[in-house]
Length: 339
Image 1 (cartoon, rainbow, N blue to C red):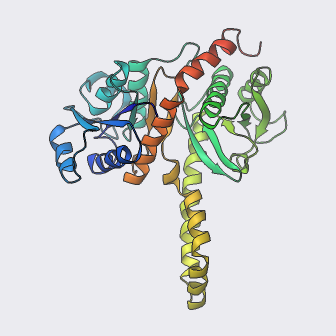
Image 2 (image 1 turned 180 degrees about the horizontal axis):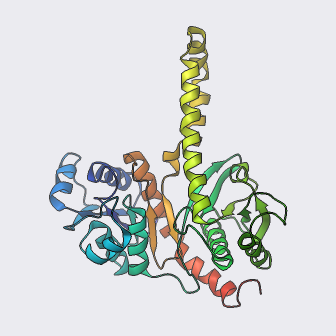
């Protein structure tokens, strides 16, 4: 494995250093040649590190401010130049780190990342992409909230970025791309979606047409493209459904003595299913379209979840995802969408 250095916003999220520090220590112990830079209040981080044993592959970079979870992106960008989030991104920009991971304010992270790292040529706006479990493996969905609306050209750019990401990480030569819509027929949906479909269909992407909401989980496509409004609703709905199903199954197996016995016998299968649908295993949404690697962890993530976000960043760095997206964009967007 090539050496990888990840800058971690240690003060971000609902739990801050109490989650980020143990996740970082665990990650460097499990991943060869990984180094972590914990960015934030050095005193607070030091207390957490002291409780877990220091390692020479985890170091601290002091930052005197932090971005609040309810702070406006504009305010964070304008006034918090010494925040843990900003400093972590600065480390990526200057080459001291290969990627940034934060569980902090999503809007602020996106705004600061766009300002510090800039977007790739040909990209109007970055998008948020994450993997969701499906019947045949994983489906990558974008955008998940960075852009509540999008033009047909931007949806086309999302398709290019999503396809390139999946190809790079999962070694799928021609990822199957679908466009989220209210029906599979060509006449369905508003004009923005229909025009985006025409642009994607005329490109060299492996476009499979419109997919409905259930198509995210069917495994019939590898990438689902949508605007951030629809994508974020789909993501949060799937997370809620996964927790509900897990709770209902657990409740049913505890309801009677006979069901408890059945639960013991079925435990290996239930544990396997729970692992497959557990949102913590898919924590780590990637900001694609930037000139650098940025991964957003869920704000309520525990240490296990945050470590998965770190792993996601490592995989993206190892596979040179931003560079590959840039190369693909050079081929497609230099000619103009659909040519």
